[in-house]
Image (cartoon, rainbow, N blue to C red):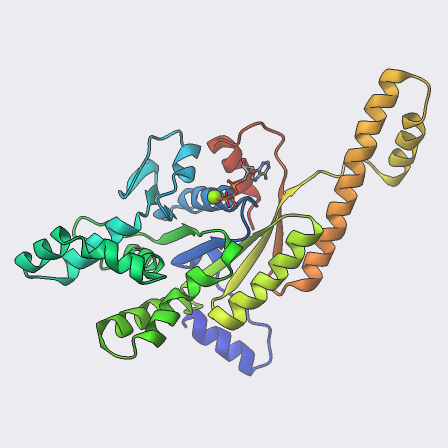
Length: 324
Ligand SMILES: Nc1ncnc2c1ncn2[C@@H]1O[C@H](COP(=O)(O)OP(=O)(O)OP(=O)(O)O)[C@@H](O)[C@H]1O
Ligand SMILES: [Mg+2]
């Protein structure tokens, strides 16, 4: 029985449907505000899936190279580069995606040459807002196909996208629908529709929102989930509360530390004050975690704050073990 059918059946019978395992999807967008840990979570998810034996590719967009840095790899560019067993990385450059798209579409060589020479794409991209996002999603779609259009392309079990920060709303994931609406008929319309069908396909495509344990980021993550569900129509499978401080002290210990923080001994006082401050932060983070759990529908999973100057691949592996 397909997971979708069993979900429907469960709904009809009034049973809470059990979603298919998150990492069994084919395409996952990791999204959230700027600087919350999207790249870190995308890499950790990639490591986890690869460890489970899934052939996985982590995609960065807008020619970013932050994921490859975890592996201390030189820039990967618009190439599918192997990082570890079962794990590849690519940085999607919209111009290259557009070029590849045209090469795949246009069979007449003279026409292709003419188009490239005339720099028509630069003009088109400048004149058409969202075109770069559209061709980027087109490349993501291509990577997720079992029957790859690119001849040398590998088959992946899972494509993880380190999506752009949601500073400008949910625009990126909405691009195909917008284009399908603007171009009412013709190839752009049908191809944009095809991309949108993949995005809203809950069986194969999902999103993970990364959040931070602070008041505004919690509000923003809740708003983002609701927009992703209602306006884009994509499945939201996880919300990762990233960077949670450990709760090191019980209430009695904290009270004792409070006494020491007001004490006479300078060194003890300084250490106790630092501990009290961290304890306060950990507690307020727990309050934000509880708020997030109340405000979102998706399961909330937590990731610890790692006290390291720079997160490397081993740090990402530690987070990968904690991913639910
Ligand atoms: N769990 C964590 N513990 C400690 N540091 C973390 C953790 N997660 C992320 N960081 C650090 O926070 C910073 C931002 O993380 P990251 O680059 O993954 O965020 P991002 O959402 O991808 O940012 P951007 O929007 O700029 O792409 C990095 O320096 C990263 O090492
Ligand atoms: Mg990033």
